[in-house]
Image 1 (tube, rainbow, N blue to C red):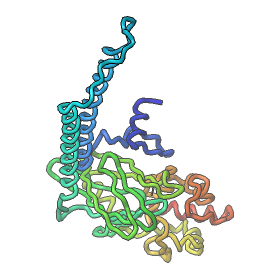
Image 2 (tube, helix red, strand yellow):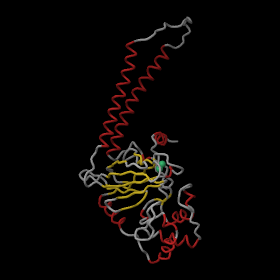
Image 3 (spheres, helix red, strand yellow):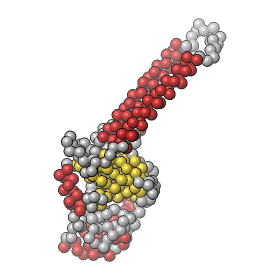
Image 4 (cartoon, rainbow, N blue to C red):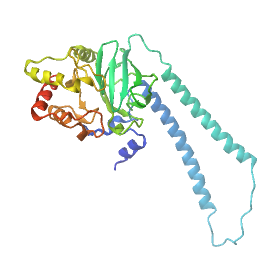
Length: 338
Ligand code: CUA
């Protein structure tokens, strides 16, 4: 077990992802967004203060153990018994209080600074709704609905495009956490929470649900794709487009629309209008299936529909018991939803 893995586990920063074994990238010690950097700097201060305390206490302990060790020349009498010392007692009461006050003030300052950041007019607005066990993602101003994968423009030196998130839950409490971009924020039924992030480096950032929410909590993974503003705008345009209609997949389309899939899933422009499961309008544009459990490709899609329990036991997508022909038709249609 590597040190990095141990450190990662201790800080809860490990994202288990069978699709892509990326541990180091969900690292709280590599922040690339202002809120994450503020939390990181505070954590370094706390760790440094704790390290100094650890060194001082350990040094005193070892010194005392060595200095007052048992010697052969000891005459067997107890040492002088000393009861109370005002100076020492005041010192070990006041110093820890001062340390706690300093750390509290530093923490309060960072929390206030992050939370009080006003939303600029042109900020990207994203609503994230936690479900057992996937993420609904909406861009209300842009008319985009997707799942498990957020896209954000990068905030480079002069062009700042922070993303402001509204967090809600459809069922139980969840927690939205992308370690490199910001701290955790809970998604609580009946309540709306907010957070923001301004990713400053291109890339795909991994995150996960950080609040136990049921049997597949550990497989409630998410990813944030940070891209240039141009690429982000292109992505928005593609996501806003109606679902593809491909002549060769007409039979599959009719089959899909005749099944009860439509009660849980939405495909824009069709009668599929469900909201219980992820929107499928541009399913194939996403990188994973089952909220990060397996890479999204034709073979995995087929396996997923054939038996969703296999890769994500306990999830709420039922096995539709399709026969081989029906399965082929449905997968052929869904794989056209790019
Ligand atoms: Cu959602 Cu844990």
